[in-house]
Every structure is written in structure tokens, then in C-alpha cells.
Image: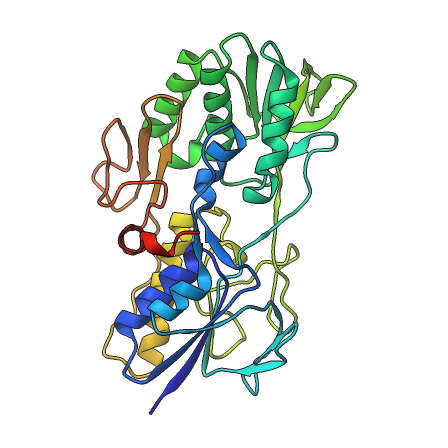
Length: 364
């Protein structure tokens, strides 16, 4: 008997889920990929795009869907009716499903008043133009708004600009107790060392409040002189009508990716209530959800709970640093000049990285 699985989303989590389902699901799976975007954009590469480097890689979603034997519906998810298992879309009406994997990501939420927002590809051109216009001796500050969990792009932007503009004054402001604290003490010390070597001034454990009249005001009453402030915005959840969500619009899930109170619905990635919004984590969550979903459809696969490992490549303008944090490892926090996992790259997920590497013809 065939089963209809709908994946809502067009990012790394959606692709990871689709690839995993193709492996785990029983025969006869009817897979549909629903996304309004025409391309999968490698968001981790947009820091290079924003600082004068090449554009982030983009892969045609319709071509990916065709390659994996899925139907591609270029539309946005508007609502879910869990009782009859129907997904409402903007232009294509209602889509029926037997199982739904929600991987729509998060939206850019509040950002620092007066600062220029950086939320990936949508802001890369504006950030690049602003940095160019600021001049070689500009005072540039990169800040994280309150509520930002994934801060690695903050340090990459600062390091990349510092490498290009030795006469500029570059600083970072972060609420974290130390740079890249999510990676644990060893990796955090490596990030701090790279920032110090690049002469990036670090203000950690501090909340930025606003940027006006050449001053970045901090919550402790101090201020920093700046010509340009670029800030990572606080993420906001998708708040999909018909699905449960917390006060910020994020979807609550259990250890297997099941959405609380929504039978037949799983979620992965930035749309969920998990605090760290990162592509590698999204792929891991999608893998867990795909196994649980496939098992419910009758596949001979054993669901495994989510046990996150954090992997990241710190781009510096020189040699990168490979960072890892995993409580399952004998060395929970690690940093190295050499890759710490297979299929190294900005997409820290082996299944997705291998697929994209083998399908360069799908790039646009």
C-alpha cells in the first residue's frame, strides 16, 4: 500500500529528511516536496557572499525533487488540518498526506534597532554594499541580538572582514559568556584565539541595545563607537495555523521529532522549539524524524531518539578551524585545523554533503 509523505520546506533539513525517507520508507512511498523557494541555498556560505566572496551555492529544488523521485510543488504552506490530514497552500489548495514532515525553517525576527540585519542570503548583498561603503579605516561592529543561539556567523563575518581590511577597527558584541560557547570550552578557546590573532575586539556577556548617532549602546550602560553595526536577528518561529506553537511561534517536538498534539506530523530544524538553529542540527533532527515516520508507515527500521552533535567550520579568511561538540564523545569539545568528521564542509551532514557533491549538475 502506498503512503503519501509531504515535506514542507526547501532547506538542508528538508533535503536530509527526503534522502533519509528514500532509504528508510517502505516501497510505494509517494513523496512531495512543498517549498515556495526555487532553490536550496547553502546558507552557511552566505558569510562569504556578504564579505566580498563568491555567492553561496544554490541547487534547483525542482531538479532535486525529480532526481529523488518526488513531486515538487512550488508553493508555501499556509495551514495544517491534522484531523483529516490536509495541508493548506497559498495557490494549490489542499494537499492530502498520510505523514507530514515540517522543515520550513525560522523567520528573521526582531533585530537590533539602528543596525543592518544579516539573516543569510536575503541580506548578503546589502551587507556587502554597506561594508564596501564604510571605507578601509571604518569602525565595524558585528553583534548578536538577544535570543540568538547560533552565533558562528558573527565571528566569521568579523574574521573575514578583519582579514580583508587590516586598517579597519573590527569588534563583536555577544550575549554569550565567551565566543562560540555552544561548542564547549576547547573549541571556544580556539575561536577566541583566532579573534585575538586577527585583532578583533570581543565584548562577550553583553547585550547590545541600539545603534544611533555613531554609538552602539550596551545594556550595561557602556557604548562603542562605530561607523557600521551588522547584527544577527533573533529567530522567529513559523507559527503554522493548525499546529501547536510556543509564544515565539516555534513547534514543540519530542525526542523523535513528533509534534505534540498533532498525529501524523513531525518537525525538524529551525521551525522547532529547540534553541540552536543550525543546518547540521536540522539535518540530524530530520534523520531522527524520518526514521520514526518510516517506522510508523510500516518500514523495518527502529526509531532512534535525538542525540545532538554540533559541528561547524569557522571561516577566517585564512585556514579554517573545525569545531565540534558532542556529549557522546570521549572528547566533548574539540577544535582542529583538520576535519573532525567525514565529508567535511560547511554542510556538516554526511548524507546531504555527499548528495550535493555528487549532483553538481543541479547547481544554478
